[in-house]
Image (cartoon, rainbow, N blue to C red):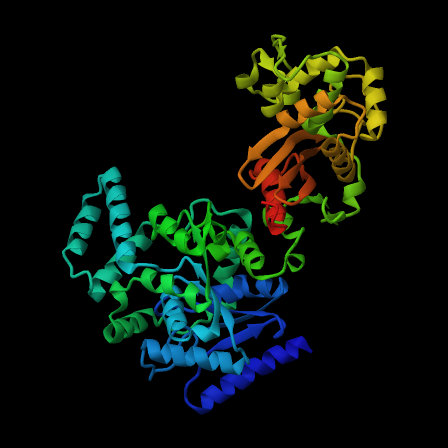
Amino acid sequence: MKRIKYFILCYIFSASSYAQAQMLYSKAIGNPKNEALIFIHGGPGSNSATFEATTAKKLANKGFYVVFYDRRGEGRSVDTHALYTFQQTFNDLNAVYRKYHLKKAHLIAFSFGGVVSTLYAQKYPEKVKSLLLTSALLSLPETYQTIINRCDAIYRTKSDSAGLRQLNELRSLDRGSYAFRTGCFKQASLNGFFHTPHPNPLAQELYAAVKTDTLLTRLPVDTSSRASKALWRHEHYSMLNMMPILKTLPAKGIRLFGIYGKDDGLYTPKQIAALRTLTGKDHLLYLDSAAHYLYVDRQQAFINAISQWLLPIQAQVDLMEPFRDYKLKGSTTIYDYKNKKWLFSDQADAGVAMLPASTFKVVNILIALEAGTIKDENEIVKWPGSTDTVKYGYRPEIYHDISVKEAFEVSAGWAFVELAKKINRNIYQHYLDACGYGNHDLTEKGDDFWNFGTFGISPRNQVEFLIKVYEGKLPFSKRSIDILKKVMITEKTLNYTIRSKTGWTKTGNRDLGWWVGYVECKDNVFFFATRLIKPRAGVNSNFGNARKEITKNILRQLRAL
């Protein structure tokens, strides 16, 4: 029924437009009762096809009513009589509101769509709930100068005399002219300013799919030149600065948000900082490994940010999508301490015990302290002179006498093996049983039973143990637990503190990676255990980082970070 509704809406809109010889391509996806988002595409002369093909449905699945359209005379809204004026653009956008029965909506203001959206919000503030400035143009003169400066640096580094000549010719033009505007963006394209050199696996997949998607392969003949020339002729938009207008919008009840990519060559950190003064630091995201098309480059971060800003928290959390983004198998287990609520990406996997790898260092420090093997975290462990590099890899930077604290921080496995040699296996058995930690199987003969053998712990059990650490409800002295808590701090800000430990080992023909810990925020504590698995023969350069990135993605969804 929803699918039928979807096509009926599209058909009615197109039919009525056709009757007026004013075809305007538009679609809506999702439940009309949900928060409405309207995507305002870039250009002039572009379209919403890439957004439609890659991102619209996923936003709808998060609980939004997503509307997108191509402006008149651009993309799929073919109209040889288009006027190419801002007012005609506003009239068409008002028609979109009417067709989809929208009184107010959030505008995703992408690229040049930022100019359109800002001017529209200035004129019709009663129709706009918020502007989501997505790679949005803020000050065109500043963007042009940024492009020229960065191209100049590139050409000088390469000793590219031809490129420098082109820039000098560009500098000689009237900065308000169409030729200057076109020349700047041509230079930006030539130097790759719109694309990140470090796309993540999902972005690579999306860009590959876009190349063959019929939404884009069947686009009408390019209209970008006609649209940009005509709009410039009528509006002389190339010297516009949106910042003064944006400053006035919050007083009119319009919220401002920003999402930009650090690899986007059109903007400087200074411009982003200026925008942050308007949005507030919590309402602006400045993303690594993202350029202009950041809803593709960092799609999950883009969707999560919009969800966190606009939706109630219970509607936001998607525990599985980060795993799909990184193309990795595994699970994340979360415990919301304040609300006494468990969250599982895979409840079955949360109960499966596997080797704890270096996460065992958490309980290992407690046992070593309680057994008297070490006095405190500053005790020095002597380098034995050699280690098994086949088992543990070659890491010469940790081959020296080392404190227990540093050994924990850099995960110097050899140091904890040396401690284990001094702790009787029965002592381990006693404390692990008393803590309820793991499957109690210490039959592995080697000292490093947490990395090799049949000892195991489940993600849920990891979290249960960490809750006991936090509450101090363990068979260890308060002093030992306090030392552990101090050593475990891996990140501390004004808003939260993370105590955690990573782990990585191999079991059979698989790599096994962990990140466990808890984050204390202002009014809650979230405990987590993420475990990833991949074939050892498989190549995934993101495996190490993904342990933390997947977990932090989920914690951000929960507003713990």
